[in-house]
Image (cartoon, rainbow, N blue to C red; front, side, top):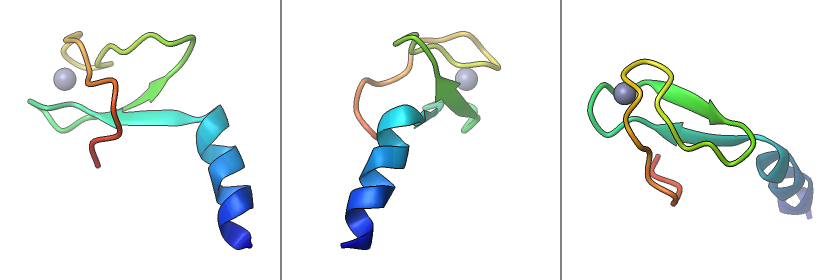
Amino acid sequence: MPTKAFGFVTDLFTFRRCPDGGAITLVKDDVFECVKCGQKLPEHWNF
Ligand SMILES: [Zn+2]
């Protein structure tokens, strides 16, 4: 299944969308913080 490879990629690169500005942040080292405004990002996928 192609979804297996896709899941592998999303495990390596976790993205979150800022609830306020809508900026897309790449989450590294489990730091859930918006790159633009610095606010805390949701722990769950929110696209
Ligand atoms: Zn933000």
